[in-house]
Length: 116
Length: 120
Image (tube, rainbow over all chains, first blue to last red; front, side, top):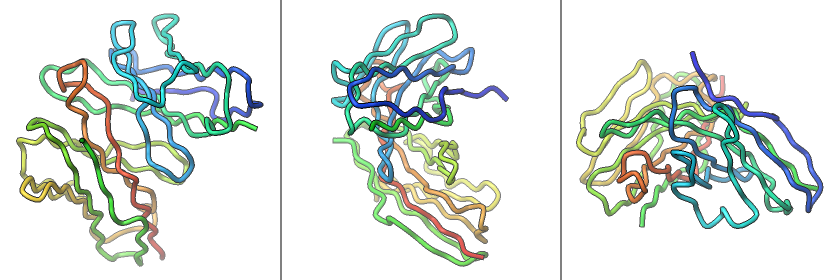
């Protein structure tokens, strides 16, 4: 069964460094998302992406964050200068094109980011 | 504003007991979708169910059942005859209707989750 994959599974970085989290969505999906989950807390929406551009972003997604779909398969989240509070699990999700209904989002296994 | 409340932070039961996880939501839209996801200790998010606002029929899938009541804005989840493998954090989520897709593929708003521990 197709699934969303994410790499790496765990990333440790120093404060102020740039990190790129990678995701390969399910191949025929058209909508892509990033969410984050600070340890022990709820899952929070960061950004959605459709047709090669950002569709929505939350207040968390400030100028330090960017997303890109550099080719036909990868979807990346870049954090330009990491802060301690960026430590969290980052989930990528994808969804097929809806036809008047809301399709479920398929989540990847997550990347645990630790900022030291 | 859209909001999902899962008032139960943690629940502990003994195997074979039935357990109900509560979810109450707030939305100003008439068309919306509700979801349950399971997050086992390994950390991934596993989709369990989607329900749209026009379908108030209860659903049963094996030991799982869901009770959707628009009148009380609740979408509760019951596990019958719980097993140790059911131990996980369970999240209720609501589709954000005010998205660029006209409510069809917007982001999800999650509750804080309920941690279920099933002891042998």
